[in-house]
Amino acid sequence: MTDSISAEQHSSMANAPDTTAHTSSTADENITVFHDRQNYTVKHPLQNTWTLWFDSPGKKANIVSWSQNLKEVTSVDAVEDFWGVYNNVVKVDRLDNNSNYHFFKKGVRPEWEDPENANGGKFSIQFPRNRNADSINNYWLNTILAMIGEQFTFDDQICGAVVSVRKVFFRIGLWIKTSDNDEIVQSIGKQLKQFLDIPPNLQVEFAPHGDVPAGAKPNRTVV
Image (cartoon, rainbow, N blue to C red; front, side, top):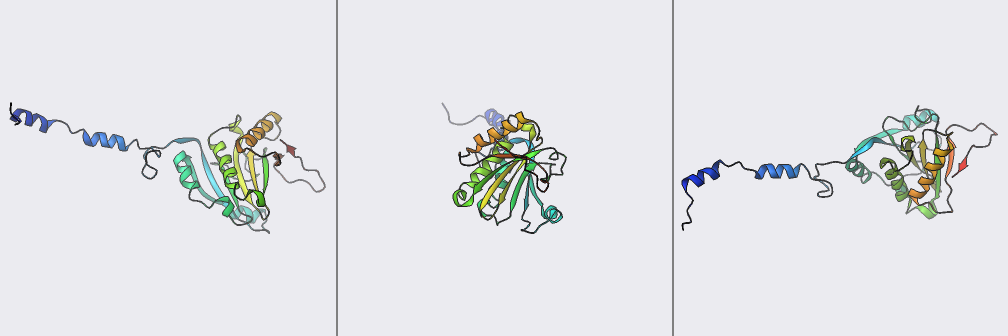
C-alpha cells in the first residue's frame, strides 16, 4: 500500500469542478432574516405596498396647511422592510402632542377627499394617556400587523390607519372604503376589537368621513 497519489488521480482531482464557491453562493442567496438580521438576502413580500406618512400641524392648522404639512416618509412592500422602518422611527408614546402617524395602502392619501376614502368612514378608539402610555405602542403595532397581514375578512375594504397624539389621550383610527354596508362595518369593527384585545371600558366607534353640519347629531355607531 502506498500513500502517494498517482499522476492520473492528481490530474483528475485538479480538473474536477470546484463546487465550494457555488454551494456557498447558493447558501448566501437564501439567507433569511431569521438566520441573519443584518445581512439577509431573502425577503417575504406583502400582499400590498404600504406608505407611512407623518404630520404635526399644530393647534391652529387649517385644511390647507394640514395638507401641506403631511409628509410621505417611506413605502414598504416586504416584511423585512416594514420591521426596518418600524424599529427606526420614533415610537408613538414619544411623539410630540398633535402629531400623527398615517399608515395607508400605497396610492391612497390619508385624506377624506381621496377617491378610495370618499365614500368610507373610520373606526375610532380613544386611549386615555394616564392609563395607556405604556401600551399605545402595542395597540398601534397590532393595528398595522392586522392590516399588512390581511387578517380582516373584508381586507379589500381597508384603506389605512392613523394614530394621533393629544395632550390627554391617544387615538387610533382605522379607515375603510365603505360606510353604508352594516355587515362590513360590524365585521371589521369586531375583528379590530379582537385583534387589539380592547378592554371592555373602551368603546370602538364608527363614523362616515365628512364634517358634521352645525347643530346636527354625529352619525356614529358603537361596535
